[in-house]
Image 1: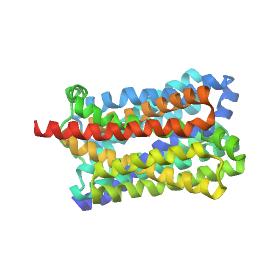
Image 2: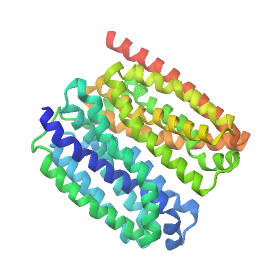
Image 3: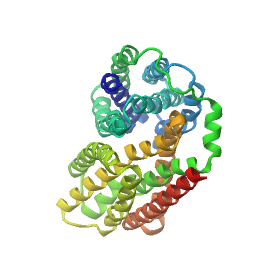
Image 4: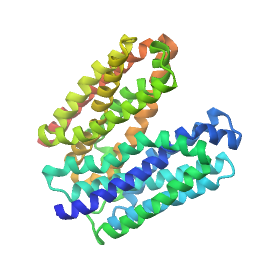
Length: 388
């Protein structure tokens, strides 16, 4: 079983890497896209929003509908849909077609990422599950670190359409690898649409999933407005912000690995309790700016490290809570993540409008404190459910 995992996990990580690059390159390529298509920045923003909303809605449904099909076929189909969506995006004559391509991309990604996570956990020994998930999600982490600058570089150097064509080309060998390396006939307990209904109707399961919404929301209260916050309080310009984003990315990579290590040693609940509690401190610190530049870089690194340690621990917690419905739980968790991004950004915008940039840290800390309460409450509900 572990020999199989060693062959499968790298290709699942590669699939997540391509999906992440394809999803996030539009952020760095936004200006060339809106200039070429002749749309306003607000309308151009829907290119990312349409992906996030579509992922949140489609992923749980598609994972449930394909639950009875062999995992290799499902993963290959998801990668194929994603590859085609990149080609459609590259050929899009207007933003309507481009947004349609982004919906298609979300459908493909919404299958591959949660099903890949369930496969990685399912073929790994219990004591190795967290590290297996950490390895698979390292691809997605690296993509988010590299996707924005890579998208920007390609879009400004070769044109935004070329950027999509390049990622489309890179997706093809990964698609081949999925088909060749995922064992034929690999199946687990079939997941049906009724399983999605049962999870949605089981409040303790949904409350556990929604912890993702709370934790990610606390992060994005600040992260969405990090550039204007550091520009106003620290006087950072382009070069300093580039370095800050690189430091944040480095913290994300370290955090992804740390999350797997911690979860395997102290369990997912204790790991999440440490991470969410520490976020109250890290978030509050952003309301104490300005501070020495070295301290800002250290703060951003620690904030990112502890933030990105969250994903593996939460995935492991949900897998152990309902292993028989793992793909559905993974899909709903991804949906909660995107919803948390949107909600955190909205809360941050409201705090900014009412009290200014200096209040963002306190606002993020309040949401982080709620995340701690949410986690403890959810764990109590889970244990009560196990007893009852």
